[in-house]
Image (cartoon, rainbow, N blue to C red; front, top):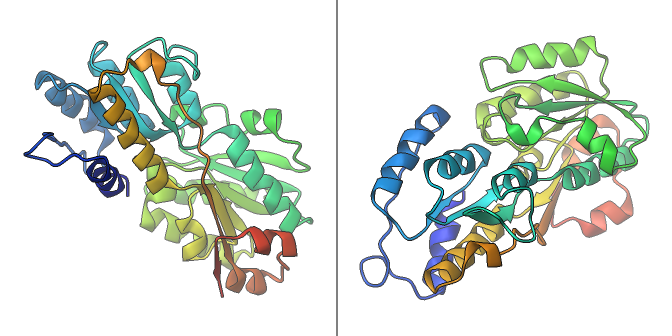
Length: 286
């Protein structure tokens, strides 16, 4: 989802592999345990810049080198803040890039959920406990958003334990689910399908900042455009190759958001989507 938009953006910036740029790529194929080894392999090639994405990729790249510039496009705000030395405006380390998710973004998603389904009083916040960007959820969400609902933390690291988290959702009497953006629980299709089957069987609305949730059957999704963020990452790489210093490249928050509303799911749940939400939707599934 990130690799191709990043490469297209490099092409648009005038780069052509084999002519004026060389790309050395490594892929973990879904196994995050391989990331430190792969990052070390790339560092051994002495590149002028490293590009990566996801929280786990950012952490692995930052641990592999303190000198080679690392561009992350994108990852969570909390992780980038820590890796950049406690600042977004002027990185104090060799790490910069663009933000994918933040408590403010996710809290906005929750506020729209409550607007659509005002009877919701308890929302299960599904997070990956191994994702450092979600370590403080849901407390971080309540700090930044005025949310008229109780938030309940549900933990799952992937398909192996998603059913445990969903069973907890039942035992905790949650009225709805929010799935935090994470490669294991939001991006992975089998996990997504399991969550959505559970939600429909129990008539619980689901939302996420990962748009594919709504395309697959969630009530709605609202979050940044990952291709747009990957393209911004390419712009950072371009600047570094032309001599820019990491400390002069502030970490950017997203400016382009995509809202997907699933009217089929809304009808199945007996919910009416407010006119203002429909009017602001980029994609409506009927």
